Image 1 (cartoon, rainbow, N blue to C red):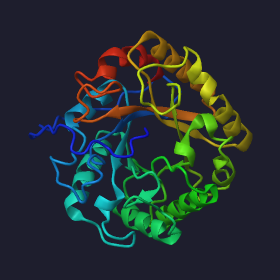
Image 2 (cartoon, one colour):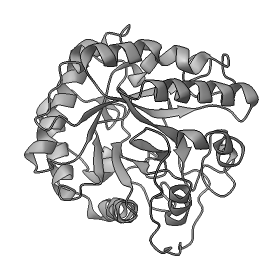
Image 3 (cartoon, one colour):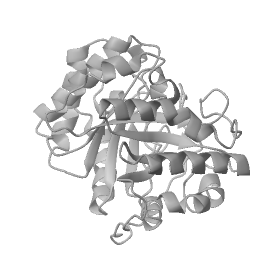
Image 4 (cartoon, rainbow, N blue to C red):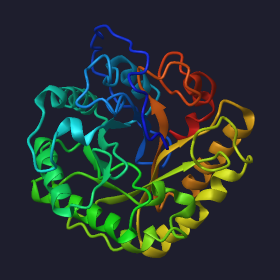
Length: 335
């Protein structure tokens, strides 16, 4: 999602949330390993650093996640900010005030038997500057990965939507993250890697990002290539309109061919469409195509949920989010 400045404080909703009893994850009927939602909140107010909990940012809601698990979802991508987790410098120390919030939601999600994806939602930037310090990026990941190294239900997402960067640099940053995560003792978890050009599936090869990304190595062989795909005219995910009822499968066809040709596994880590018949058909078509090619596609995550989205056009937040009420009922066969 191409939000450069995420809701500076978005209409805050406060109040303690009762912790529900443990929810058993449902057995999925689809062939996908991962189906779920990208959870927003902790990356909001990204110009207010370090920011104030409840004013500038928030954390995902336990009860909402429990409800989504009951719907069959098993993967929750938790957006957060690198600068809030480790302020001032990439090689610095953890800000425990912020980290305890991440600890809480990760522990809650994984305690329900679901996957928690740690998603530094930074677009390849740190304090708004493109990250060029490859070793420093690795150091940041060493610090974070050590914290969750023993939790097998944690997934590490290298960084959200690198863009307008050198393709080789993006590859180097991803490899540094992989090496750091494994070196920190996190050897059992999946790692989601993201490419340049907003990690878009529709221009995965044409942008040139595929070359460097295809060379990534992992001693545990648990890399998943996370791509994003929206269905509006410019692929930015900023409109309720979708180009056509078939645009979903059309836009991921090239990436599918690349995954097959290179023996890789992929994931659509962000996708969405407006609450209308054409978009619903387009999303269904894309997910159906992914099921047909589940030898390379491991699953999909909807963008997005979170307690501050209010009436957002793609909102998957229970109980009244726009997509939760108007789109999700049409997607149950793909969960």
